[in-house]
Image (cartoon, one colour):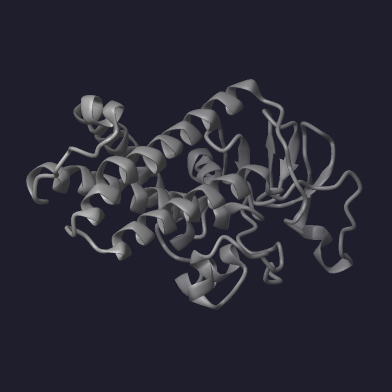
Length: 265
């Protein structure tokens, strides 16, 4: 479960994801070239600052790629329904297939997804039971990387000592201000947007409610937690070890939870 490659044929999603990869690639190339390496060579920063930036960049792109190709929880054509849980399944009125309650039919992908939260064009995939943890990691590391980039942009002009530019690349020397302004602009836009999204995602986990359930107003007292937050987060990330919640380079092992939890959908 969750290990199959899931590829969505959607040109709009490809464009959105391509834009995100462009922003990531732009900052991963120019921020070290314009700020980190020059200041390190002149002794203004330590190598730790460079390693931390590449560390955040690596985890950000890894969570993005994995979230985009991971199976979000697509239901098979002929699911085997446990006898003890048949009352917690229902018939989808769009694809005429049996599905667990809290599942949703994605009109863009054309199939039902277990505990679907929403379809995200920025990863060109649904966010469901099996890749929700990767989407949360993507939001988290995108915030960290954007904040780090903005801090470096600020410190380069207002905190670090001026650089000796004799050995600088000609292109970087001529267009330094424009490169960093573009970086700062993209950082502000992404940080503002992803922070709001990350907040709503966290609130959804705290209240054990998906975005679709909130929009359909089918949940009563959605602001009141149904289960302890440690349990809901452990179910999303597939482990009780909190340190593993931050690592995208692993396989999620779903915790066995009956589908009758919050069977209000």
